[in-house]
Length: 304
Image 1 (cartoon, helix red, strand yellow):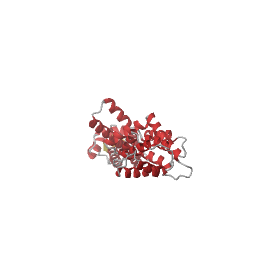
Image 2 (tube, rainbow, N blue to C red):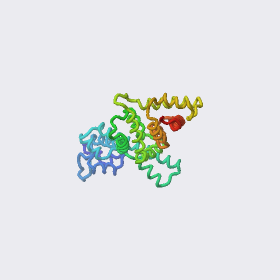
Image 3 (tube, rainbow, N blue to C red):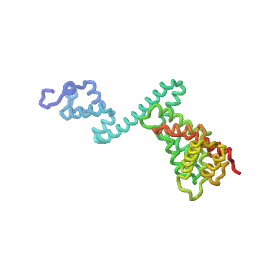
Image 4 (cartoon, one colour):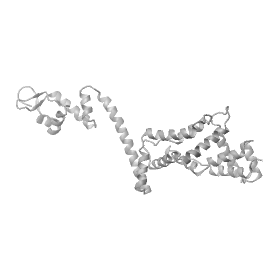
């Protein structure tokens, strides 16, 4: 403190009192966030007690990661500490999510022994922004449902859920599954297959059919075919025709066969498996045996 009765401190004295370096305080002064209140006869910067308190606030804000621009705005009253803190929380959350994805990608690469090309692809797909991921899903949904206004809304909801977004804190397995799922739903051949399934669904529906009718049919198929399998009923046995009549009534069996053949492909089954992983669900049953039994029974007992 200079000995002139003003109580002002030199930059060196301020540094000793706060534990900061002279260089740091001088830099902050040069940047306009800690303006000296006066100059000594020799031209040295002088600071008062309010300057010392201001310096402590600057140090706290800087330790919290705020840039000097934000610090300057807070000190000038252009924004509040709370507003700046909220913005930095959002930025930190985004950084944390990005780091978690990076960690998961690297874990997957290490586990799979991925090539450089595969690692690049995985990283690119996994790090897509949330908006870009939504666009991929929306493009998929639009293409397979476009113009099919009478499609079962429960099927639409189910497919949208299955094309889930990558979680904020994904496991390596979820990154792996999301990458494969993203590639799958962008594949034109797979989209055509899913479009065909929805078209079959739409053709089956009448104007008064309630939502969930298609899902109800599939659950009934699984139950009746499972009972036939448990009873060792062969698909080509006469009893199998009775099961089909109970399941289909007078429906066109050739059309149902086309529908079930599409729905039971390996790629559709893989789509379901990947969706379960990304959604954090236990492995879902594929009911491959039940579907295969009905397909074989339909081939053995076509329409008469």
